[in-house]
Amino acid sequence: MAKKVKDDADQAPTSFPEKWWKVIQKLPEFKETADAAGVEDLKKIVVTCEGNIYTLEQEKDADINLTAAKEIAKDLSEPYRDATKAQMAKLKYAMFLLEGKGVDLDNKD
Image 1 (cartoon, rainbow, N blue to C red):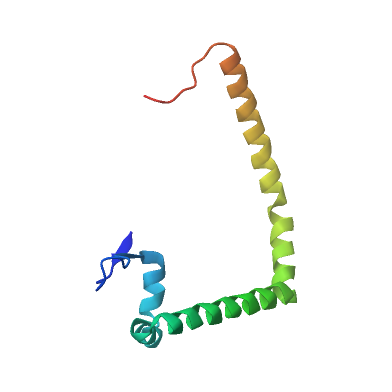
Image 2: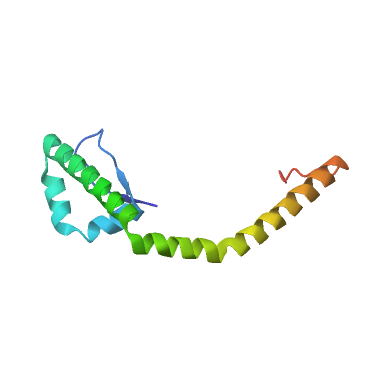
């Protein structure tokens, strides 16, 4: 659900995604600055945020502990993924055979 935002211009957005609105509410200083900013200042904010995201992604990729934890999680979850994949293959094949035997699988009811 989107958060309604008051707008002065007819062309301005009238809603902001609730997911991001909750974050913005925790950043009152940024909101005040952004609300008061002109077009050029908003463009500077965009460029700064993009640069920060780029840097954070590099740091995340370089985080040895995080990478190791991901590998452990991947290894531990492999049997579950394989079992789910096998069940999905069985399901798809059974549905394929049912369809081949003339069963209508359409769920438009």
